[in-house]
Length: 301
Picture 1 (spheres, helix red, strand yellow):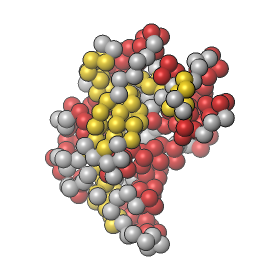
Picture 2 (cartoon, helix red, strand yellow; picture 1 turned 30 degrees about the horizontal axis):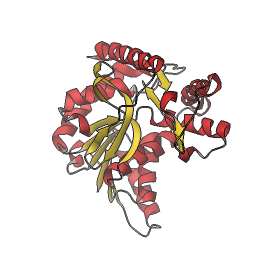
Picture 3 (cartoon, one colour; picture 1 turned 60 degrees about the horizontal axis):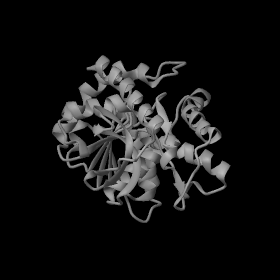
């Protein structure tokens, strides 16, 4: 099982290290502009994996070395502007970067599943579909996966129930237009009541990424492990349900845009898209998220 990570920065290397420790991949290729740094990262990880019972082959490479990859993960990004408050500010620069990277990657690994991490993830997931020509089940973004985990953690403290036992999602845009799908949230088969206090947790979860970035200059552990969780579900055909950014075609009247919905993730990529029965306010929030993402798509396309 081979994984290529394009962009071995803090997020990419957290992902690589997690996949190595959890032994989900047997081969990891690191592709970056700075080949020397990628080689150093690969060498350091090679020394570390000697402590593992099951060795993992780790090496630096070029885009053509993605050939035969089961999964290709895109973490590469232009520099994040200082004081950034909106991920969409990076859309233009990262769209140009994707136009450089994705066509040759698609040619090198035409059968891979493509996972987008680079922000703004929803417009770039849409762009990835356009640039690669891959079927929509093989292209997905991390979307609101981390947002949902943060929301569950906060909700867990309030409800005094372990976050793993909560089925609560943040859906829509990975950005300001995300919203909690409280109408379908539950624990142990019991509905979690929608209250202003619980809904307010979504706003706290939404701001946590920016807070972490301001305090330490990057976010890497939560997104790195979330991406590993997604990649493992593909490699091991676990068929876990998680919110990912995917192409929406017809849900709630929305089409031709990428937003986060719960999906079953397995060896084919997106095995099934779940269509939750949202209430009226949540349906409108989903449509508003679609408008915001579509405006960014139009700006970069």
